[in-house]
Amino acid sequence: MVLRRDDWHDLARKVDWTPRYVDERELFPPEISGHPWLPHEAWQDWNEVYRTTYREYVANQRDKDAAVLGVRAALSKPRLFDELDPAWVQLVKFHNGAIALVEYAGAVAELRMARFGRDSAWRTMATLGALDEIRHTQIPLLIGHDLLAYDGNFDWTHKAFHTNEWVILAARHLFDDMFLAADAIDLAIQLNFVFETGFSNLQFMAMAAMADRAHHHLFEKTLASIQTDESRHAQIGHPVLRTLLENGSRERAQYLVDKMWWRSWRLFLALTGTGMEYLTPLEARTRSFKEFMTEWVIEQFVKNLEEFDLERPWFWDLFVEELDFAHHSFQLGLYAYRTTLWFDVTLPDAAERAWLNGKYPTWNETYGPFWKDLERRWEAGGESSTLSYGLPGLCNLCQLPTLFVRPGRNTACTLERDGRRYLFCSEPCRWIFQQESPKFAAHKSVVDRIVAGEAPGKLTELHKWMGLEAPVETGKDVRRGLDPWRLDPIPRA
Ligand code: MN
Ligand code: MN
View 1: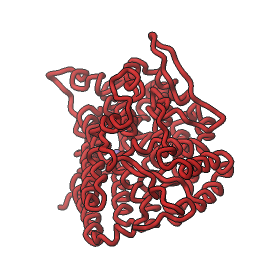
View 2: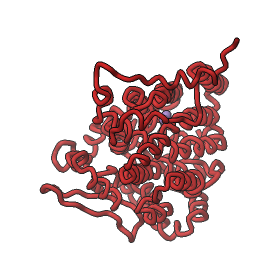
View 3: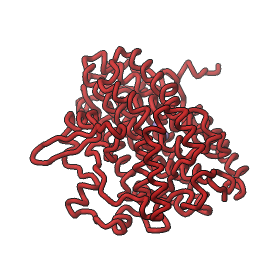
């Protein structure tokens, strides 16, 4: 008799036992297993919708890796890279630096749940999740290494998270909070439920659709391949959230969801919003960032909230308002401080501005004058007069410059605590800080460190402190200021 999968699988995924030599609380300490601490009976119905056996996992992953490597082998001709849009290449460099080693940190998070998750089915899923995240690290490291032959800054795929570069410090602050410094329950809500089911579709599936139209099929393939893993292990979040709600922790669950929604939004507008609308060639833009957010992220998230009878975050109106402004304001900041980035940025040309105004009807009125002013500066004083030299105000929670939402409406706010004055980009960031101030209060932003003399104030020394060797590594205008670059499409290599 052949044993079918369904005959044995339940037995293999539910292997919890009753500890006799130690107390259950010692085996799963609340400090790392999480709160509320409930006896195992409360967790024993933990259930994942898409079940996978180890045998199926290995077979599937092997096929997926073979498919990615097949495309890599077929598309390794230098000509194919040379034909990519130069701004698109910068998007890939931005993505690789900001994401590759986060995936590796994600493996640590999954391993924490593989040990301290409260039910064996959860621990099994997380074990496969850890293997997923290792794969998600290895693929961009491999592809990024291939690209070193064309552009030395692709070493930031590996290097970025070993530096003090400010975008990376902001990303590290977020991901430490989301999962590295979180217990198994909090990280299942924050990483699996909010970040992975809520946002990662945007970075991986929406971006893959754009990569296809930008003729970067290897990037498309790797993104889509990674996302198939994400959607499997993301399902860890739902049953954890359900157990919390069934056991009197509704308020805590709502807090974790609200907080991580806001923090993820900050990251995605900075990374994906600017990448999609300032580094992607026009013919590859299928939708605007706002349209992607609305269709791929908000709809799904609202559905998830309804499923659990949770409220929309209290800052929902501000979030909706920011959809029209925040990433456009942030792009101005990236441009002005571009020498502190490891990738190049663009000043939108005439066709791009027309596209932006078509998607965001107040764009010209709000942002047009800023870009025109930058053009005049290029003409009058050359590149150096288009850079900002003053210190920006950095938010003491998200670590990003406090330039949201739009010129004319400043959402920045402050807080006094134990004799220190803190600055925030917005009320939600201040609110998160206040909920967990012991965790956040001692941290210093890059600007705090400069003011305290712990980081150099001189720009050239600051580059070095951030890991950027000027001028080869520091970010530039993609068009290098060539006339008549302002109105022409970006010249291809
Ligand atoms: Mn991943
Ligand atoms: Mn993941």
